[in-house]
Length: 454
Image 1 (tube, rainbow, N blue to C red):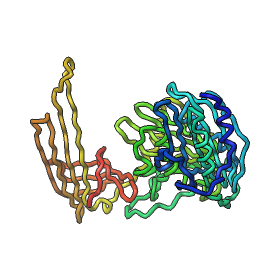
Image 2: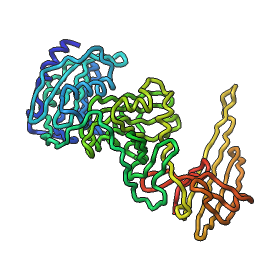
Image 3: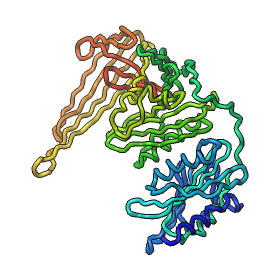
Image 4: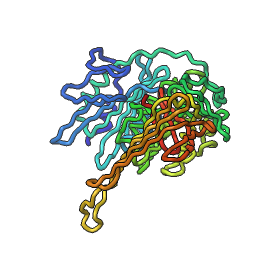
């Protein structure tokens, strides 16, 4: 690379929004893409890029969706540097900063530093715009000054919507989080609140189960197709989940940190001090998820008065994938009691699995063993039920089929039990509970989950 400092200083001093003509709009930003550059849009960012395959020169510009931020541009820049820049490349020094620029209600800070990523060296540049509790970030990665004019033109073409000041009650630092019990969401089921012996109380809500003890709240988020979408980069998936599940309910954020841990069971962990739109209070929020090798895990949102309160209850952040049992265990509070009237209808469970065998010496296939089953309970009037199960199992090529069924009366000996008069020729009582998903419930009999299909 030649004269990287000259390159950076030349274009980072340019004011955003100096040109009116635009060719693209993303979130609150409009911009003009350089001619012959590639543009790729995603949910939370737009990337534009170019590459000279002969010389190896490249430039990649990523424009991110606006995020909640403080009204302190330096705090916002520092937080973005930690997550946006350091989350992508390894920088070898603190950023060199340019003078701030004020443009139509936005304060713009820019900084750059050398980076090295898998043997490739270049310059990482961050442009951060702050206005009325929001921030917009632009990350530029390049290994040449060849595209200096293109970068200048791109930054000059950007126009940001003029920020509208929010009227927010000044936050009370370290104030206690209100512990009033939320109103249960209408569900048509008998039990919408569970009070556990250890002091936690769970309440059904529209988009999550609200779990509270004293001033501590935990939101067990229901499965969400957009937030739960697979992303091979754990950090990107975590940022996407924060934007969808957490950010809409808060107005500003500071001390933002995304700290995922990769491994056979990845840990997603993000935290920040944020201001609740509903109360105007500053709280500490942690978004957490444990991903298992076979998939699974639910996003849990922890809300406490401050970081110290969170760590007293759940322990401090650590870099290993073990030792998260207390946080992970909060998902078990998605648990609600059973009433006979709640069971009416058809509940079904499908299961399938296969084991592939190989010769330990030759590695050749030694066949496969498979198992599949369908089990159904139909609860009718007068405490009647019908039960049936069909099973197919055995080595592929010699699979055996079996089935069984019965009918009779059921009862509720306790709100956590269901008793049947006849299951395979004898009475049987199952431990029973409900867990919630958005707009529905899952019935658990023993350790088996049944979904209602009619």
